[in-house]
Length: 500
Image (tube, rainbow, N blue to C red; front, side):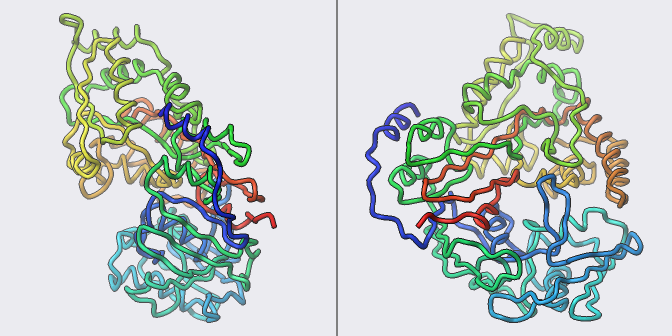
């Protein structure tokens, strides 16, 4: 990596003159499906947020604000009545009405469209569209997460009649309209000049697919690309700060990294062992040396910007002596300096393997021998989903912005492989609190319930919280007006402009 940084610092920044009408943004991979009812990968969801509008939008604290729905009422916990903003049109000039909203969700609920998002709307019984600007959602039972699942990133409204081939040429109502796409090469979008809200300033955006991290940095240095967000290694970002033709923007982000423990394991099912491991891990030097201070310590799955975040939970500052005492108390006394062996399963991705090596050193200090096993990502993730591991580390990207994630990853009913409780954590009190929070509409009451959930999880430790990665956006100096959101999505393209 030092060699890469050296090359980046001294490579001549020469390239053809950039197109004055097109911003080139680097992305790591192609979106899998630009139908907002189907695509669940990060690239699909973030580009879809620019092509489509949702009923409600998230603000900087992830609270929900009016958007296509200029207002709504909840006459009872199982009925939501939305009143649409008048005069909105799709990119094909067709008016956006309640019929389109109903079709968007009916196509999922009915099973007409094959999508991983179908289960998200299972609590919806049926939807009425009594007139062009009114939509009524009828639920089977109270479900407080409904509004979140109607927001940007979760879904976008498509025209009535849109079928399974809609992703070939998607038509939305957002600030940009789809122009073209070539798999593993690019996606091109153009400004929607008739956008009902504030129009974008950029005429055109080319999302350029560059899988290799070093090539991404070189494209920025040569000025053949304008923007990249959260797509460069920490060392590369440090090197690019020396380039006068580039600007590096850093701000607190929400991507959450953690160590997960398999609670079915005979060693890890003992909470004293889990707490000892937490005390043995020293996050600060990892953030400083490996991540180059481009991250902040985490104390919850939810990010600190979130309205439901609770910082007043049990914390585990680095304390090897306390870790050793806990392991003694649990009956794991050292023999020839080793208390027990435990396996850390990882992918072959470089940053994860480096983390594993550091953890190996830190746990050795308290007598735990960490055996590292690396696999190609598909094999690694398949094993994690099956519960074939003791320890592993992953990240939540976007999924931790809704407190309903607690149900998804910690509820007893969410055990893998069907859902994402891959630690096999089970606590009846947490299950009850999750149910109450899902059924309670009052946000202050929900905050109290989620605080309790976070406090219990901090004691039980199915996850060891590591850090939240900063949002790191690098752009050429011809780009102005960028405002980065905490989630690290592509909304900054709504306000960005190119110097002429």
